[in-house]
Length: 264
Image (tube, rainbow, N blue to C red):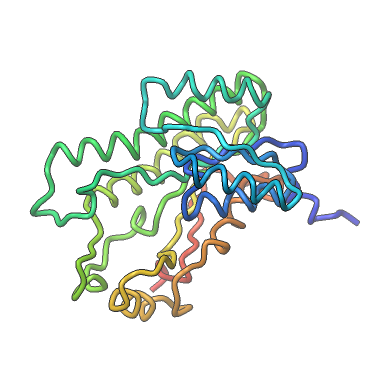
């Protein structure tokens, strides 16, 4: 009888997670390492990245931290190439970074064109160019790899602004534009690189608990069929699934991990 759990194994694989020291990225690094991958933490936060590296290694798994500035598009190709050369493979690449300007979380009326352009460049363009570069490297070295992009419920659905009422929070116009673009970028690349055995998928989380405003939490959770926000350890296993052979016939997909938010 076939051992289906073995399909989730990443033993002998090398995974890279951009934004690997972040809220979701750190849990994704742990998930990939727990499946046997050498988990490469790519981030600009050295302190958090090195601590995560230590924690994973102390648990008997494999991790390395590498300083990585995804928004420096001029050096992105060269930096990715040097990392793949150093670690001798790129079996899994996850774009989980959340780069943004200080004036990111702003209402439409106050949005400046310069801010819009900078955020699109930092977030969407870094995801797009990294995905392209990595896919081309996988093709070059004949690696049937997996690329996973982090999207959002607001990449496929309009924003419900009522959940922000009574708070200083909002969902930026730029956010929806970027996350929607990531969803279709993934489909394009999946279609183009599928012939080389390279799979590219999007994971769209709903709201993830991070000690948000209590008024916002109450309104958000009342709309979710499961009546709560997600935990980080509920997003990471989905990325692991898409990274592994358990999802070998899935590409170009948009996986909703939202407690049912988008079904109602």
